[in-house]
Image (tube, rainbow, N blue to C red; front, side, top):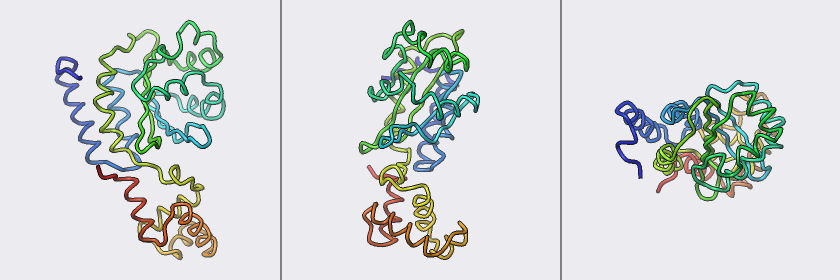
Length: 243
């Protein structure tokens, strides 16, 4: 349990601001981006990143970073996530976990992942947490401190444990992930669910009307909807679940 003495007055203010954002921006697609800096600051981190796990393809997608070089994100997506010895193990924990709980630093330092990726970008002390709802990955936070910073402690775990249910409740479920929509199907579903006609979507995306209808028909079949109203309700529920 988070105790009041865990947080200074300024940290309590930041903690309250995070809770306010989770409530006021619930279900918004940019929620991770809106809170990652606050989470990192609350945990006195030097770096932070966030991804959404694509279970079907076993890949980390939709990256957001804080104080991490854009080049590092590109390298991780293109190279290192295929040779990452720690993230899959951290994800299995489904709770705030230190990197050295799944792999001793003495062993990690012998890997290419550490020597060619983590170390060059200053990522040393790591703390990860993964968010899920209805068995679906909503996103994660991968929090890091530099080698000359203090290690994370159980204090940071307690903070994340308190925030976890609020974050899991607020993050949207990507409808494309839930129903395995293609990027184009996902784009069309979102536009149609906002009330745009097929003709409007075709003009906006500069693609044929027949193509729009084909993508929409395929998407509705995957989602299990009979009409546009049902589809819009599915999209709304994914973003704003009721508990």
